[in-house]
Image 1: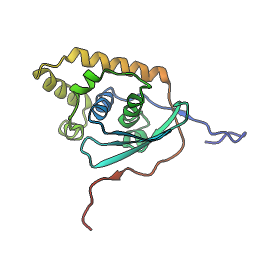
Image 2: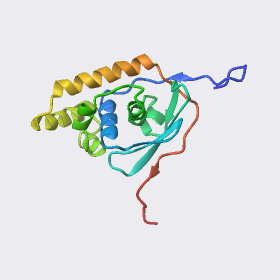
Image 3: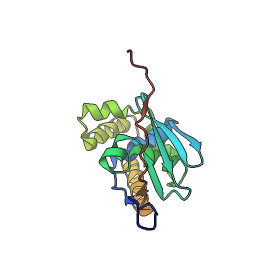
Length: 171
């Protein structure tokens, strides 16, 4: 929305479910984040069928993405979090991210009917069964969440085009 002086006003982002941080760590671990310019990036979905665009201001205070959570739910979606991690705006543990590599989040979230807490618990059970440390991962996610709170990011009013599908559909 424009103010009388012509400046754009910005709205604060709602905080995401913590599950989105797990997804963002997976995106970074899977090398699905590509910086495309000084203020832009693309993030490929875990199913690799969509590519999300993320853009931000030079100071990283104003940021937007065309993923569903960011566009329609009003909270910081995992592509934004993944970019913040990739750019080291929020430092993270590569060791912990590595434990979340290769997780097919779209399938897991569908399996648990978008109950993100159940989906995360399922993934953590699998990681624990392979010798991973559940508590260490949860603590890292909590630390990243608190860093997101501290950043107090604002939404840009810019609407990005819907994400492109990377798979061709027959006509």
